[in-house]
Image (cartoon, rainbow over all chains, first blue to last red):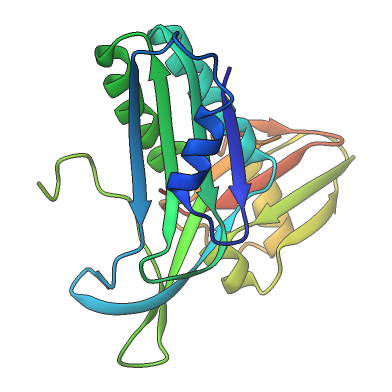
Length: 150
Length: 77
């Protein structure tokens, strides 16, 4: 139960989701909750054209697995999936897919939120943006808390 | 004792390398490993530390065969 993948190449989260769900035992899950994070063309008042995502191989996978295990111990889940990009990323590219399957919606929705929040604060990834108006690059300094941009 | 010291993101760029190999006479704190590996360069206040891929503090000890990593706050997702 659960899979965590790092992808160095662009991926289609909806196809990935369909493929993964197609392998789950039919009839057992009544709820699927999904989060997809996509690269914007704007961040902190600056126009952004692309970015590079660096990670700590080994530690990243370890912590994604730990986060999934924690979710599995807090909610009754049938399965969960995390897919995260690394490398060169263009505007509008999907960055992260989080999906949770459970019998009922409460666990699925809460666990999906938990997984993306924990990922953002614990998994060792770092974004470096290339700005549009210049050749300037900058490291993203930190992730905001849930609700900061509501 | 052989200790692997790794750097990511801003720290990797500032130091101009991603890894150092340290030889110490015994276990040292993560901060002492940083000081020895970087010739006492300033360690930015927000820097996170991991020992053998688990989050740790600057005062935790690293010993033979351990890997200690230094990196800025994470920004995935």
